[in-house]
Length: 349
Ligand SMILES: Cc1ncc(COP(=O)(O)O)c(C=O)c1O
Image (cartoon, rainbow, N blue to C red; front, top):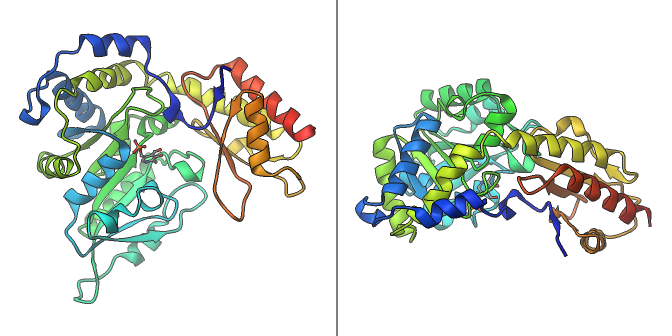
């Protein structure tokens, strides 16, 4: 069966143009700095984010870990969101790999961390305290509905970080979704950030890889971190070639994914038993809940949707019945309609 796979934008497969570019890629040993395709990808990524340098890494997680290793010393702490990927979904990398403490704060519904709370969380110079070293933000904020965080907030967060000697890192796994949704450039969104990770392998559809961007000295330290993480690859230009196609041809079309997410949200909001405000959907993610009186369990609903050829993700929470559907380049308008019909049928029977 051909599935309508809405679990994540990570399920995207490379386009024919990417496969052709991969086959034709000029390569060399990247650990010697001799892979021309990796070098080109890093230059393009640095340019697009307005940073001086960039580092091709295996994944978004590796980019975030390398950034934290490059920005901190043991005994530091990182202020981040409770719902952030860095805090929740990277196996406690700050503790496990960096010897650093996470200082999580609650996000507002719009995906931002209140800056007065951030300011209050910064610890003074005292031998009792860890050294607050980094403010880590996420854009788009995945678990807050895939919300894009605007330029004004990012700038204010950057000023606050600078004023207290903190580095600002942005987990921009879906930075280009944010930029397209807000109609600004990626560089504008991270102008005040010291570093940013973005993923090539999500909505941009490359088969693997992310890029970490920052200044030259930072990237030099991050390159060392990538090595100890086992992420220094050799002829990785084969992968970077797909990344270049992603950056050159897959960014603007993200607007289609956002339109499909809006179509999906409006359709699902009309389904009896679904709790969803389509007004809060701003990029490619549609989070929805079910009314408490829906008798079927989440697992039953997922299994029945699968029988209809529709895959969605659900959130492992003891207190909510949250589901997530994510649009991407392999999802078309008719597929969205079929997914809505499938959920309608599953909940009605
Ligand atoms: C916000 C965010 N950051 C980082 C990552 C990590 O990316 P990867 O799966 O490439 O490690 C993800 C993955 O979904 C993500 O959603």
